[in-house]
Image (cartoon, rainbow, N blue to C red; front, side, top):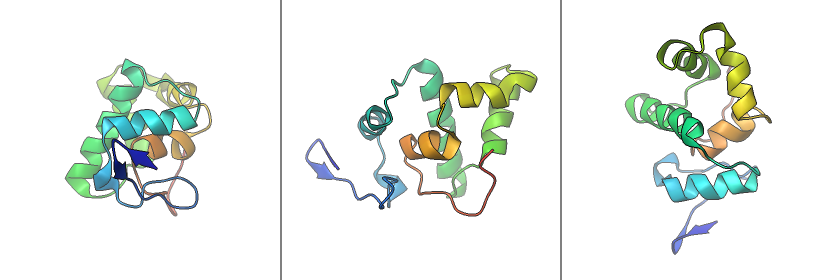
Length: 110
């Protein structure tokens, strides 16, 4: 994938190999591949995921994103369903990919 003249390396499933290469232009391109338009709510989740990654150097699993939606954005018990409304093909398939995470392995995907 080339974005603004920079080649972005991805694995065979389309996830970034080097999450530190991520930027918003890449997110938009990845979302387009998933037939999603990133609205403010999507950006909010994606940016939470990026902050989590920057702080811990690991991708957040769904429980952290659901807790963020429930507690910080006020979705309460509806948070899990809301996450999958925003990313209908799943947290790993869409949210992690668009947020520039490596393909998650061996943890809860929701």
